[in-house]
Amino acid sequence: MTKLNYQAMSDDELRDWVRYHPHDTEAFHILIDRLDQRPKVITRTEEEFETELQRRISQAS
Image 1 (cartoon, one colour):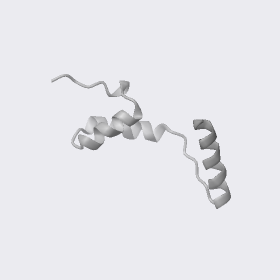
Image 2: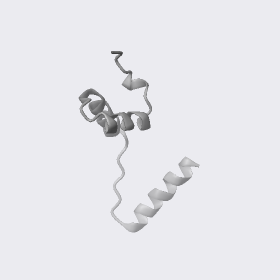
Image 3: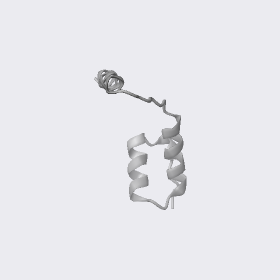
Image 4: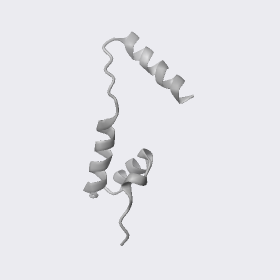
């Protein structure tokens, strides 16, 4: 069996792989490490949440 290159997978591909192969602990740990490296944004009010949501929407466009 060929070993998969998890590092070459996109986040969506890796997430799907982990979803359908829940016993693949190596893939799970790589996915969690990727998610943990993302910047975290904490919003405390509705206004902060709305501002952050609009910022992310405009970045995606």
